Image (tube, rainbow, N blue to C red):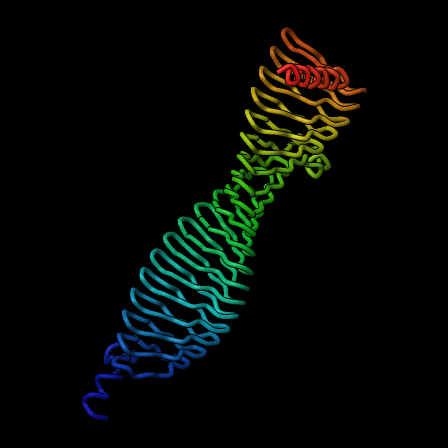
Length: 357
């Protein structure tokens, strides 16, 4: 071997590690360790180990291992296992696994798996999965999925899915989907989230959310929420917990058995059997058979057959046949038939005035 080749591949006399530089490629097998520097490349097999530094590259196969440092790059294949540190970069293929630490970066493809720790970053593509831990961050594309834990964060795009656990946070974009437990999610246009006990969601225009027992959503203009109760909690004799929606200007909620909605200015709720809504100034609710609404100042409820409303000062209820309203001081009801007749009278008067002009 000439001096140039000795520089390309050398052996550390103390550690017996293989040192790889200057465009050389080595195969690292059982019991061997390679340190790969700029321009070097290692292929790591069962029992081999590579440490990859700035400018070095490695491909890691079944039971091979690699530590990736700043500027290093690794492809991880079936059975390979890699830890990416600050500035390291990995691409994880089917069956590969990578742990991404602060400043590390990973791209997870079909069948690959990544675990992100504080400061780690991963892009999850079709078939890839990731667990996102404290201060880790994931971008999830179509077919990718992630479990998001305390302090973890994910952007979820069309076709991506995430399960958000206690303390996790997700932004759900068009076509993305999240299942939210004690985490928090922001749902954008076309996104969808199922919010379970302890989860919270902010739903923006075009987003939809299903809120189950103990979940909560704030629904803004163009957002939509379906609020459920929680029969499973009842079945094990715990206190009943219901979903809660806070419906803002332009938002809409459908409140089902055991669900609850606070309806504010410009918000609208349809309240079904055993659902409940508090309707505030500028809010509006359709109260259907078995539903109940408390209507406060400036709120309006449309009370159908079998529904019930309590109307407080300056609240208004439109009552259909069979509806029941408890009117408190300053509250007001309008019978549906009288409202229709009044509207027709107003229209007739407008037509007469118009003809006179």
